[in-house]
Length: 508
Ligand SMILES: Nc1ncnc2c1ncn2[C@@H]1O[C@H](COP(=O)(O)OP(=O)(O)OP(=O)(O)O)[C@@H](O)[C@H]1O
Ligand SMILES: [Mg+2]
Image: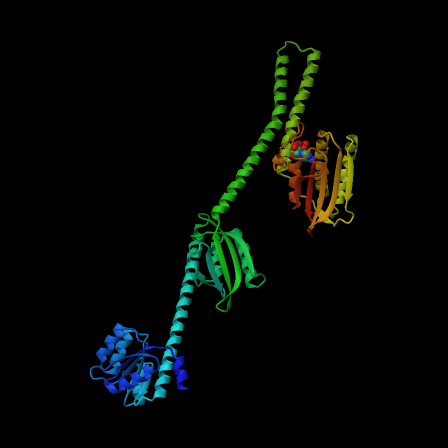
C-alpha cells in the first residue's frame, strides 16, 4: 500500500529544519527512500540561506530552534518564496500551536514522534496540493492572457463597440467613446438627444424591435452630433450601426457595433451631385438646342420685316408677305412656348390618379391608338397579354401615355432599319410585379447611350425632342415601378415596365 503511494508522488526538493540531528536523519532517510531530494539543516539562519539559494517544494520546520523561533522563520520563508509549502513540527503538539501555525501560513502540522504513515500522507497531500495550485495558477494565467488579448482587440478596434444590458449602457470601447462620448451607466434613451432629428424614429424603431425580441439583429445608418446637441448642425457624423441580441454574463444583452462612414457618405453624395450636374448639363444643352432653332428663325424674319418697313410705301403684295412672315414668327414663338411648357410639365407633373385595374387595359388602349400608324408603316404586331394578370393600382391614362411613347420610339427605330418590321407587346406577372414589355426589330439602343436615353432632351432623332422617355421614367417612378431597356434576339430594343403588385390606397 505504502509503495503504491510512493510511486504516485513525484520527486520533490524538501528541506528539513530541526535542531535535533536524529530527527533530521530519520526524516531524511524516510524521504530519500521515497525518492525525494532532501536537504537538512539545524538552525533558522541556515534554513533561510538554503531557501534563498534553491527553490524548494516543501519545508519541514521545527517550531523550536536555538536561534530563531519557527514562526519567525515561517514569515521569512513566506517573504522569500511565497509558493513553498511549510509543514511545522513540534514535540509539544497542542491545538493552539496547530491553529497558530496554520494561521501564520503553514500548510500543515506534524507532532513528534512522527509516524511514517502520517509523514507519507502529509507529503503526498502537500505535493498534490502544490501541483493543483500550480495548475490553477497556470490556467488563471492562460485565462488572463487570453482576456488581455481580447481586451486589446476590443479596446483597439476601429469599430465602436458598446453593450447594453437592462436598458443601461454597461460597456463602451474607446472608439465608441470617441464616436459618441462616454455614456457608461446611462440609459440608451439619453443618446437620442445626439441623434439627428430625422433619424430618431428609425433608430428608436430598431432598438424596440430588438428589446421586444421581434428581431435578433438590426442594421441601420444614422447621423449623430458627437459634440452634443447644443452644437446641432456643426459636426454631424454618419454612423453605420449593427446591433444584435446576445448573452453577456448569462443575461440578455445588446451588442452594438458602430462605424464612422461620414467620409464614404460624403464621397457618395459628391458622386451623386456630379452625376446630376452632368445630367443637368445635358438638359440645359437640350433646352438651348430646342430654343435656338426657332429663335434663329424669328431673328431672320425680323430682319426681313425691318428691311420691308424701310420702303416708303407698302404695296398689297408686301403686306401679304409681311403677314406670312408674322405668322412664321408666331409659329416659331409657339414652338419656344411649347418647349417651355414641356419643361414645366416635366418639372411639375401632377400626381397619378390611382385606381385598381388590369394593366392590360391601358396597354390595349395604346395599341388601339397606334394601330393605324403601325399598319401604314407595314409593321406586324404580336400581342400577348396575360388574361389572368393580377389587378394592381395605377393611373390608366399615364400608363397608356408611357406605352404610347414606347410604341412611338419603337416605330421610329424599326423604320430606320431595313429588316423585318415587327413589334411585340406582352403583359405578364413576375416576382410580385406586373411587367409590360415593348420589343421591336429596330436598331436597338447602343450600350454607350443606355443611361442617357432617360435624360430629358436626350435624343438621336433630328425631329425628336428627347422628352418621351424622361416623362415615361417620371411616371413609372411615381408608380413606384421601374423601366429598363435591353437588347432582344433581333438586335432591337426591349423596354420593360415593372409595376409592383401591392395593395395601395386609392388616391382618386
Ligand atoms: N425603341 C428604341 N430603339 C432604339 N433607340 C431608342 C428606342 N427608344 C428610344 N431610343 C433612343 O432614346 C432616345 C430618347 O428617346 P425619347 O423618347 O426620350 O426621345 P425622342 O423619341 O428622341 O423624342 P420625343 O419622344 O421627345 O419625340 C431616342 O432619341 C433614341 O436614341
Ligand atoms: Mg420618343
